[in-house]
Figure 1: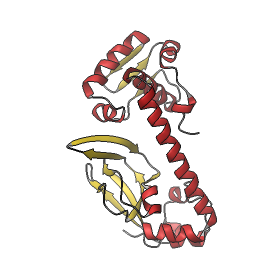
Figure 2: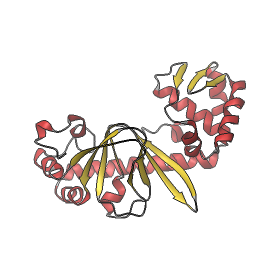
Figure 3: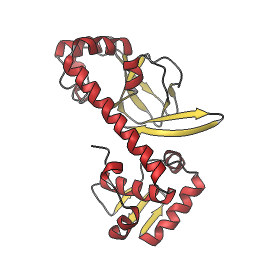
Length: 236
């Protein structure tokens, strides 16, 4: 389904930092070839190594970014609405370095990459927004690498739970939003090691029942995890 006039387009897309400051005429030019599509769960949207034909915008649902090598597979990240992927490949006109599949029924807007690059060349505000987003993505990769290389698996799990708790407004009880097998992959662990880590964190006041997490002793968990904004704060 092609997007119509600006009035018919999703306002949440226009309000994304990536598009918010660009000129109206350029936004219309950018979206002229875009279209909205609804995908069922577990549909592969892109494959690593393929040309980056479209910039994808997740409007609803969620998307798993993953990679495979030598019969192994790992989850890299989860994309939630409303956000884009994979911008770097679109701008560089390079092959995708990751694959993507829907985790649930999802609505995705696909914007032709050639239109993104064309508007990049004529809209300075849009270009600055792209540079800012790519810089943020780079910093997130650095933080994730530090998390993987400087922390033990138990420390990674503890800090992940603290980050999820912060996203849940600091509530003592909250739900894991990621299926445990995928979470283990994101944290660089096996599902068995993740299960053992949850049990080990019981001594720091953490109880995990199904997807329900209860932090019984906040101070004790933080003393063990030693969270750092230079690793755990993905907003900076």
